[in-house]
Image (cartoon, rainbow, N blue to C red; front, side, top):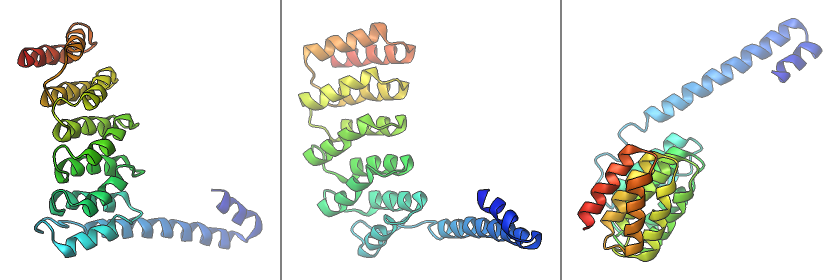
Length: 218
């Protein structure tokens, strides 16, 4: 807006109108180009087999794109095409666990859970960092991923999940209960914490879920 106002002050009215028209055209053109760019990504990587070199190469390029949608598309494709446990492919995903866009981070957490081998210490460590993500849905996905990737009975991972019982987002607390159960056996201290959740959590659904978890853990 300041640019247009400056044009009014220094240029004839006709030129100021030209500036406004040019700016509007630029905005419309940018939106149209972005739409076309995203349309070209429809179905990207959908039918590619795991390890497909062409698709993986295209993913590497898309991950550099300034458009979050393109980066998320690449991450989703890697989830399907990357070789299980392949460190180079996982390294691409680890980088985007810290992407500036929340949708890309969500997709990256899901992809790491799919591509990494169970009990992969590096993958567990990387995903654990997203338990502190500012976005509640990223945190929820990180909890689920740890339930899939963590080592059963691992005290450190279980302690991290126990901390999530205090998360302000109800689905995070519910997913934490599920992840703890997936990584059983658990110690008596954690069982006592589950009993506390079953009695005192602010959400009835969480309390009921905690009771069910306790009954299954015995």
